[in-house]
Amino acid sequence: MTEPSTIHDIRMRTAVPLTPWASSNVTLLGDAVHTMTPGRGAGANTALRDAALLGHMLVEANQGRKPLVEAIHAYEVEMLRYSTEAIRESKKQMDASDLVHRPIVGRLQLAVTRGVMRIINAVPALKQRAFQQMMRVRGEN
Ligand SMILES: Cc1cc2nc3c(=O)[nH]c(=O)nc-3n(C[C@H](O)[C@H](O)[C@H](O)COP(=O)(O)OP(=O)(O)OC[C@H]3O[C@@H](n4cnc5c(N)ncnc54)[C@H](O)[C@@H]3O)c2cc1C
Image 1: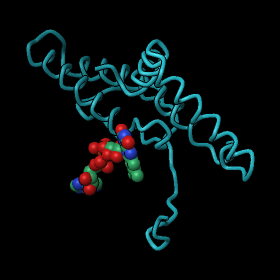
Image 2: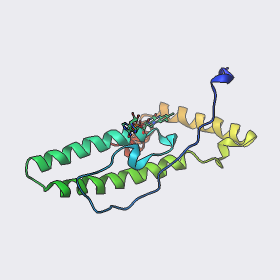
Image 3: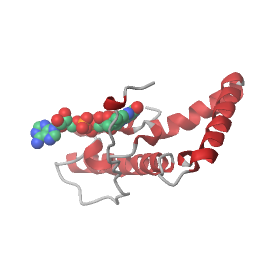
Image 4: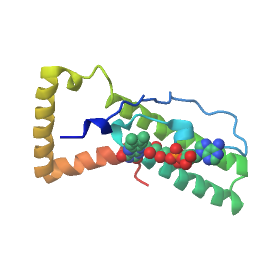
């Protein structure tokens, strides 16, 4: 029932996994370093996780527990670890060749997915497990 004129296509882009670089007093966070597909709803979550971690590292440097560039490097190594996982997981959930985009099989897959979601919602142990899985990608902190 959506108003057709409000629908438009957008091009999905995703970062590729990076390896740590030589750190300096300039760093990156959020989409600037790890833009990802909306597959897991984790882009903003990951950006906020970066902000929390980088803030923590800057306090470490400010209080003399780590030299500044070493603190930034520690942030970058950890940020690249969890953001790489979020990028991969998000892409897995958003693939144009996925069955869900096929005409008949797609409807079937959607029905099965909804059934499984209802079962997970009704069984506390499964719900807890699904929540933990989701938080692994979205960031526990
Ligand atoms: C349709 C859609 C749905 C989404 N849904 C979710 C979701 O459910 N859950 C989730 O976690 N994430 C979601 N995201 C992702 C999330 O929006 C982004 O990951 C998040 O906004 C990234 O934050 P950021 O601060 O890194 O970048 P941005 O939010 O892009 O902020 C960058 C800012 O810098 C400004 N800027 C750019 N260039 C300059 C310049 N030269 N000078 C000054 N300012 C500049 C921009 O105007 C912008 O305000 C979604 C994204 C989209 C597009």
